[in-house]
Each structure stands twice: as structure tokens, then as C-alpha cells.
Image (tube, rainbow, N blue to C red):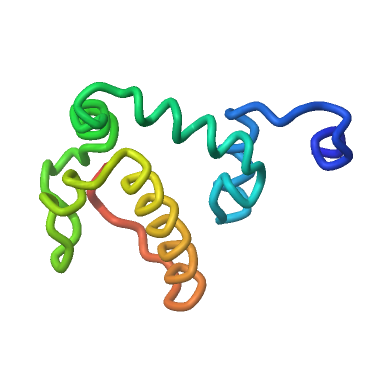
Amino acid sequence: MYQHAKGIRPISIDAAIAYAKAFGCGIEEISPTVAMKAMEVAALVSDGGRNVLKEQSAPSYQRWPFEHVSEREYYDLTPEGQIWVQAKTHASIAEARERFGVTRSKMKA
């Protein structure tokens, strides 16, 4: 982290992802350059990444977890829009965990 912060060593996309998760922020706040590269890659995923996202993030109970958010609206977004929503959702979950506490679900994701 010291080498990244001081500009001694460039931040890789893997490091940027790890930092963003740890700090609860978007990759663009860690490195705008890496964020742009991630968006460029996401835009090149065929069919907007719908199949990749479903296969990687589908919970074991196979149900869309957001009652007030349409699954169709989410998948109609561009890959960049989906990444933005995911980052905002991640930050919101972190805030909710801090504000309301955490309970462990009996379901495995």
C-alpha cells in the first residue's frame, strides 16, 4: 500500500478492487485510470455481461434479492451502469451494517 500511495509502484486492477472493497468506495476514488480501464473492459463483454454477471453472482436461492428494484431495469443498464450500481449497493450495505448491525443469514450465498 505504501508503494501505491507514494507512486512508487502502479496500482493494478486487482489491487484497486481490493482497496475499493476494503475502503468501501468506488475504484474511481482509488485510481481514475484503473476505473477507466475497468469500464473499457466491461464494455467489451458480449451481451453486456448479463450471462457472466448471472453466473458469478446468482445466489443459491436463485431469487432476485431486491423487492423494490426491477431485475429487468438493472440488466437493461450498460456495463458501466451496472458497475456503478454495484459500487453504490456495496457502499449502502456497508453503511446499513454499521447503522443497523449485522445478522448472519442461514442461507448460503
